[in-house]
Amino acid sequence: MGISRHLAQLIRDRGGNFGIITASIIPVLVGVAGISIDVTRAMQVKAEMQGIADSAVLAAATSLSNKKDFTEAQAKDLANTFYATQIVQVSRSGKETETELAAMVKAIKDATTTTIVTKANGAKGKIYDVSIASSYTMPVNQMTAIVTGPSITLGTKAASQSATESQNAFSMYLVLDQSGSMKYNTNTKECIKTNNAGKCTKEEYVKKIDALKGAVKGLLKVIAEADPNQMYARLGAVSYNEKMQDPEPMSWGTAAVGEYAADLPADGSTNSGEATALAYATLAATGKGSENDAHNKKNGQVPSKFIVLMTDGENNVGNADVVTKTACNLAKAKNITVYSVAFMAPPPGQTLLNYCASTSAHYFNAESSAELAAAFKSIGEAAAKGITRLTQ
Image (cartoon, rainbow, N blue to C red; front, side, top):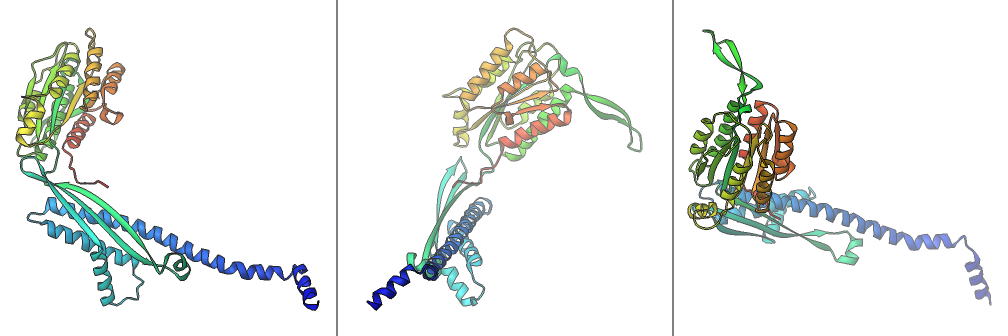
């Protein structure tokens, strides 16, 4: 009876319950805190592993494409060593001996696999697909170990691609305005006469047609420097006023188009329709004699294709806007990238060229000679871009 009475009193006494509950919960709270610390640390380590893996494959891929006689075995060792060394640096406690650190590096290298797949890139080049996969065993505290064991394994993957050639093959067609308004002055002056001391004594405004010639020259210089052996770039051009002029056919390199642009006069009205349609038809053609056929025979690639449409005015002949828009729509549907450059053009001309551009990023509204030159240079650089990049 005494025992029963004392037990009943204990149950009714709520003051003692808090201590019992607290004593029961503290181990749970400590356990949750311990697990949370390890989860947070695991997320941090995982992110660091991914960044290091990305850097490792980029280093290996870039070395393969940039260093002469750099072998796949050397690239794999570079990636594995880079990855293992960096992982040890972010995971070490600071108390390890040099021998222990070396053992850690070796263990991570042994758990890391770098794979390289080599493919042809045109007639002479190579494409390297480099991937890495690795794991890291992270020790955990005693509370987490109750659930996971003494450690958890974190994995990561990354991939990169590079090529021994600095650019993709491409075909570009320039559609250039040579209408009468191109004889007008720009807002830019240039020196045309100097004295014996080299000081300018006479300036004149640059005409639009001359600004265009300079801009085209700048674009072609970028392409020529990127493709010095004329293996990957084909260009053609056509000018227009109230009608399409005789075009410069597609050819390798930049010389022919450079001469064509340098000889452009400026006269007549404005009709971009027929010239834009010719550019589309030339680039979209298939079969023997097409751009795809020409590149396949010389560099083995399927080329990227670009139209560069430029005007300083607005169409004032027939249904030129409709024909131009139709050609632009067809080009974009065939994955032909359309760049458009409105050069000191009125609103209707700007609206048409903005419509024709593949995206807003492919439309340039140049209000000066310098902006025109910058637009054409930007287009040339985009066409001749390199292809080293992360792929995963």
